[in-house]
Image (tube, rainbow, N blue to C red; front, side, top):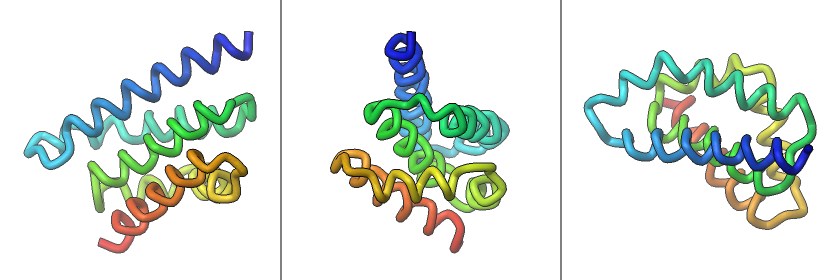
Length: 117
């Protein structure tokens, strides 16, 4: 059952990632801002469940980075208010999986840019 849930969660995360990347550098990016809190809530719930495998973890931290990268300064305050974004990022940065760590390093850079703008 956990494998099935991870598969479904990864599919949802990949869809979010595709949507965010598709809107990047688009004049319609502002339409996504109202969805950002819901995406962050989904990421928080995944992190708090603690049932993620490394594939889901990598995709989830990538979505957090995509959110920051696509929405820029509009995402910064939302990410800072998120229940678990910082803890999740820290956990991914210290992961033994190189792919998770690499995604987390990119997400950290994107989040830093979004917060500092």
